[in-house]
Length: 348
Image 1 (tube, one colour):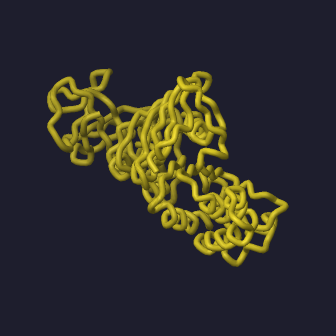
Image 2 (cartoon, one colour; image 1 turned 90 degrees about the vertical axis):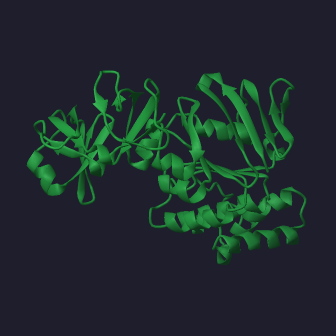
């Protein structure tokens, strides 16, 4: 079911427009406060924008000019939040059957549909329990079944795994991947793996605006926004192409391998490279041609068997012995060095 969305919410600084094709899953990515949940609230009918138009499967859900604002229960939209929000006084089976019953299905028919969806998400044997008797992962699976049992035209997921223990997240992620395969869905997430496994396309929202969009794998391997780069674990530098290199506002340059068409002088470009490709020195290195950037260390943190050294928007991953030898602390002066062969440059 195709979704067409455009809305402005001035008091939240949000002005967003996008479309979702029939059967497509789109992930909304962005920092906290960017406006992602606001978008979901507008689609679900929980928040009224100042202006805009929302259309789903050919039906107008909201139109400011025509003064159309369908009630949430008439929109055929299901919203799954971070918390399951199951009715505590109903059994799991009756929780899932609530949607079909509200739509006019018989008690037996609603329960049969509910049992089918509980089986589908892997908790078919828990229908007789109350929500208080479920683990977090079981409750969220039941919430997924409840949302799907209502047969919505559009499914909205707002950080559905954020409140779960890391041990149960992978299984639920695989469940969602299976049940969302042919459904129209918008999912808000901060997890790159969620986006890669669940979404066909991503929209990066920052400051209430869409700043980047494209196929999921393309955005996360060749990001054009700072947030997408951080999510993908990449360093990103923005500048303009000048004399066969990326030139920053301060006049410094960064050399790399051009991906795709050759940029023309003056064209905005971005460069990306992995933190593991960055060498760190206490004094300026010499030798083979490379990109060298003087930095001031902002944080030093251990990531498994590596140590991540952050300097503003740039990061370098070094081994534990190397970190010990460098003796870097926040405020230390250092040099980040990366070979041009490790840097990809493409249009911004």
